Length: 202
Image 1 (cartoon, rainbow, N blue to C red):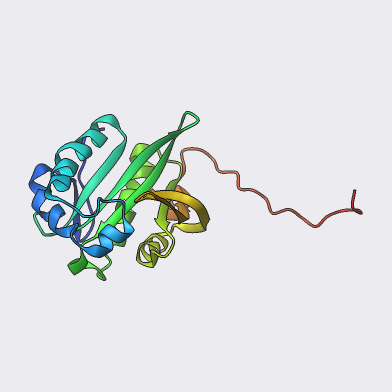
Image 2 (cartoon, one colour):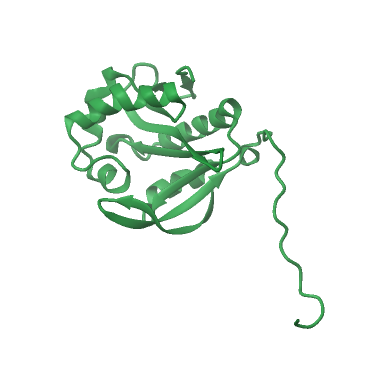
């Protein structure tokens, strides 16, 4: 996938570049980002350099992850990071979203605006059939953003996150193209709720 630029009425979303290293390093010093996301903790300067100079370009080149720096207008300050990450299971591609917002720019709706743009891009350009959101149980801020965009909560997965040598329970939610008014690449046949039992017990 060639890197692309997305835009919303307020935001400019571009793939991270080496020039973003200082802002990424500064943002990731936030204890909440280190507590609730999968970034290293403590977060060193080398972690920021590796992320913007190696991990992000490799993800775009190998179609394993598409990470965007979210800025307030072209050339504005970094307000968030978001991306779509690809996993393989039984020969099928599964897509998961991830994101964090800088502390000083939270509460303005930027994260939901960026996530909506990235989700629409994933459905229309990547051909994703479903986007998943996962977060450690208790991350109410991330859950509020996902639900604002339209992700539907589907439950709790036990021991589904590995962090700091322990497994953690996580919430899971999903977004379908139809949730955004988009036409899915394949038809969706929803499960039908079982009706009342007929006859006696076997």
